[in-house]
Image (tube, rainbow, N blue to C red; front, side):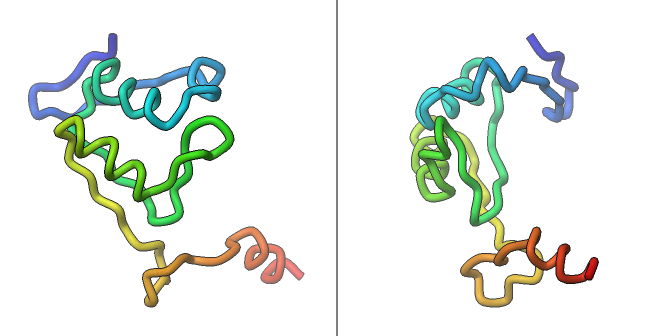
Length: 96
């Protein structure tokens, strides 16, 4: 199990092969019970779980149901709060 510092901050490394087929519910349960996370922070476009089945709203719902703190943040440069667009396309455009 990961070591946690006294201030409540820590780091955990989980092999992607072990989590990539988890449902959103299983993933949040792993964060809560397996890793001991007290909360999560994710971008508004966050996708998780097998085949990106869960989104930021589902993360909030599942984590809060387990008593975890949740912060969903707007994307950088997203004044509208509705999504930051395609960063890959912007990077390619700048490179040309």
